[in-house]
Length: 137
Image (tube, rainbow, N blue to C red; front, side):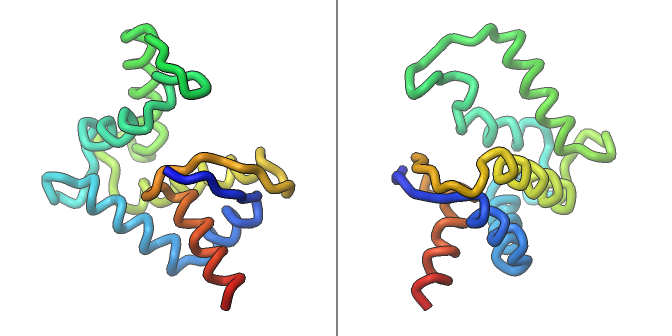
């Protein structure tokens, strides 16, 4: 984990760079697809969502969410990715939903830089690294 400074433009630029974005999406998808069938089942995506611990922490402090509510939340998130409701997420669905979520985050962030703690392999960290390389070239 590292603390980075980013703004909406960093995210927009990353998403608009189709090559960088698609490579990052494909790499993450392949890593998540543990049975190598070209699809993410609920369990495969759930493992990734749970690893983020977004709902189990509040400002870095562990909290104990209601297990039923948490299950409904994860079900809802899976449905967000499963655009055709076939019970699995393909690469295109994963890419489109990740893109939508990142753009929503950027739109909510605005253009003033913010400091964030980012996981090393996160899409936001990749966006910051891409921007840093672009600026230093």
